[in-house]
Image 1 (cartoon, protein in one colour):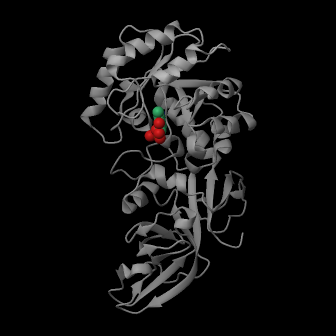
Image 2 (cartoon, rainbow, N blue to C red; image 1 turned 90 degrees about the vertical axis):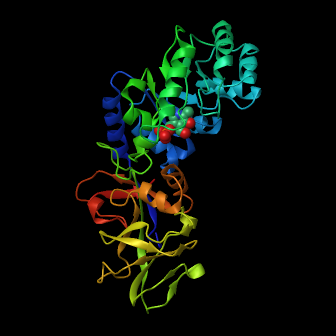
Image 3 (cartoon, rainbow, N blue to C red; image 1 turned 30 degrees about the horizontal axis):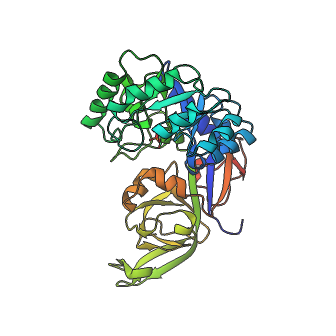
Length: 381
Ligand SMILES: Cc1ncc(COP(=O)(O)O)c(C=O)c1O
């Protein structure tokens, strides 16, 4: 690897996170959300780490096929259901369970003569993305209950729009509406994403649907450290490729967004938005050089970004940089970028080589790995 930039995945941390989530969830079953290449962590590696999950959640048939090819034998839920009627046949072949969120999907199931599907009925209690509105849900439920292509009562689900804001009143409003609409209906219930898992034990119900928490990242707005008991799975690492002494008044990078107020030592890091680091003026975003916390300066480029080396006067070319991971929270970088940790994780795979941490004592560290997790070995994933 000529360039010291890599996305390092700690599969063991993912496995431990799942165990921790299971302990938080009590008797609830876990649908581990692995769509979008497991939020950029690598779907097949994460499926192996989540082998203890009760099911996996994906967005597309292609993702389901990839999981089956990799040998996943457990349940797979298509979180958007099938996108067209013709997708029922491959969904059946892949033994997928289906979310049903609109009339067209009901009609396709009513015309299906193959083996029955497990279904999840999605009720829109206020997010207004997918699902039957409360006034439509009873009719949809009756049709699913009467449909020969549906195996058993559907799991009843809804999705929360604001659980990531602690104390947001709409969480209670949505949950109350869900309970009112589904009162007396047979079947299991599912409400909680990561944020509700962590903050609303009364909403755990029968199935939890965590994504972000399993990757060890905090879902709450304004909170940056990993949730208690969870460890970030991804370490986005790079290295210093140039150390520059810039005189007072010099400005840094495209657009000159940052001007040095005094003579400054500046490091150039071999990572930019072409590697999935956010684009834009990231001045002030946390970053770690040789194990010491510092900040990004100015606008990021496609392949490079600049860091303030004032706290690290001895910094040299080749020093490791942590863009995010266990030392630098991806949530904090996301806040500086005006983005979200989900988006940053998904992006951090564009070009950077992905390697996997193997918890082997005494191994050597990959280039760019910061001190905390050096001492384990890495291999290409
Ligand atoms: C329906 C549904 N459930 C659960 C999740 C997981 O959400 P989170 O990553 O916030 O836990 C998602 C993610 O987008 C989703 O769409």
